[in-house]
Amino acid sequence: MCTNKNSRGLKLIEVKGANTDFSIDTIETDTGAQVNILPIFFVRKYGWAKEIKKASITGGTSIDPIGMLDAVISYNEKTVSATFYIVDCARETEKIWKSSKSEFIKSNRDVFEGLGCFPDMCKIKLKNDAVPRSVPSRRMPLKIKDKLKKTLELLTEKNIIIPIDEPADWVNNIVIVEKTDGSLRVCIDPSELNKHIVRENFIRFYRSKK
Image (cartoon, rainbow, N blue to C red; front, side):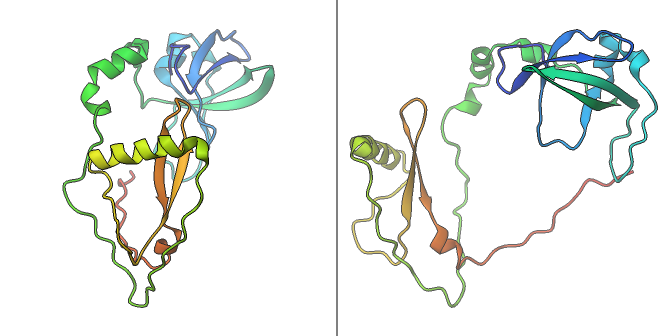
């Protein structure tokens, strides 16, 4: 739950219950979530406790809900009915959300500066019957030609890429995306290479349930 109306990814939503007039608050939305969740501290803070009713959630969930809350949600002239599960597994982080974006980046500058590199070399294992493929180069728009050249030179200076001036068995096309600030994001299209890679399989470990 967040009270900073200028934060990206947050929506100003009006929530109303059957017995309580909910004030407008700013919450973070997750359109891919299977259920709606509200922390108990938020419910108590706004005096919505009398809206809670016994929960009947089923399945293999690892969260034990305290109860349920039926509400009407309004956003951008759209209104829908929704059920929120009340859980006691979160705490208020108002102090963090009140910090501006610039202040947060300044206090965590080491996280946002530089590229960050893995200490080891990544090795790609190919199938025994892999046949090298050199993909023909694509034509690039003239309007980004100079900008692309400067971007590639910068990546070379930072030792992110290494120039190859001789024929190679495997050649992949580059994919270029122009960002909103005008800079270029450059990566490769390894679709042909991916067909011949031997995938490594790892066991996934899950946190044990109660």
